[in-house]
Image 1 (cartoon, rainbow, N blue to C red):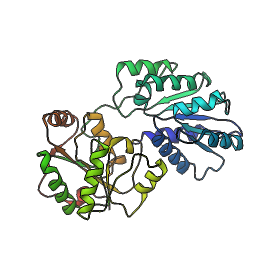
Image 2: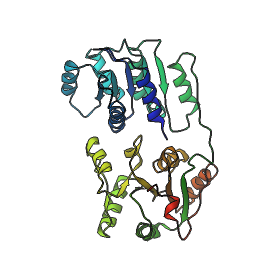
Image 3: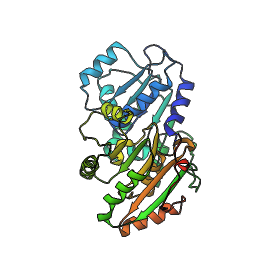
Image 4: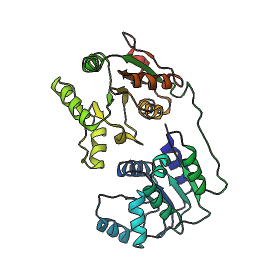
Length: 329
C-alpha cells in the first residue's frame, strides 16, 4: 500500500551522508523483511552512489557482519533487532549520530516481549532528538499504541480510516463452496482467467506444498517455497518471469512488491480482516487494477467475510470476468 516507499523516500530526502556515520536505522521483524527493505532502499538510491546501505540479520555469521563493518560503515542500517543489538554489544558500530529511527511493522515488533526488549536496547543508544517513524499495516491495540508513544516525544499519530475505496482498482469477489470443491474451482479459474502472475494464499506450509504438487501435476506453472530457502533466493523466484503461479503462506510476502501481479486467490480465507487487506494490497498497489477471489468454506470464514464486506466492496463471483477490469496490460 506504499508504506515502505513513504518512509524510504522521506529518509533519503533528509539524509546527508557522512563518512563513517550511521544516519538511519530501520528495524524489521524478520530477515525476509530486512532483505526486502534493503533491496528497495538500494533501488531508490541507484543514482545516489554516496549513500551506502547495510543489511544485518540472524542466520548470517556474525563474522561476516564484523568484516563488513570493518571495511565500511553504512549510512543506512536495515536489521532485525536481535542482530543489531549484538552488533552494538560488540561495539562494531555507533548510533550516536543517527537522525532517523524507523520501526517497520511495529505491531509485530512490539507485541513480543523479547523482541521489544531488543528494540529498546537499540533505541536507547540513539540520540534523543532523532526523528522516529513507526509503521503498521494492522490496527494497533491500545497496549501497542502506548508502547509506541514511549519511543516518541510529542508524537504525531496518523491513521488511515477504513474506506470502501481502499482499493479502487481492485475487483473483489468471493465464492462459498465445500472444502472438497476447492481444487476443482481453482483449476477452473486458472484455466479461464488471463494473467501475468497469480498468488494463491493457504493457511499452512504443508498445504502449500500439497497444493503446489497438485497444480504442477495438472501442468500449471506453479511453484512454492521451502521454508529453509534463503530470502534472496525467494526474491529471485518472485522476479523470475517464467514463474506464473505462487502458492504461499502470509509471512513470505509481508512488505514485498511483486511486479506484474494480476490476481490474488485466497484458497484459505484470512483469519483476520487486516490479513485480507495485506493480501489484497499485493494486487492493488497504488491504485492499479487487480483481481482478488476468496474461497469461504466454514462458519468462521463466513464471519470473517462479513467483517471484510463491512469495509470493502466484496461480492459474489460472477460466471465471467472481463480481463480488462483487472489487467494492467
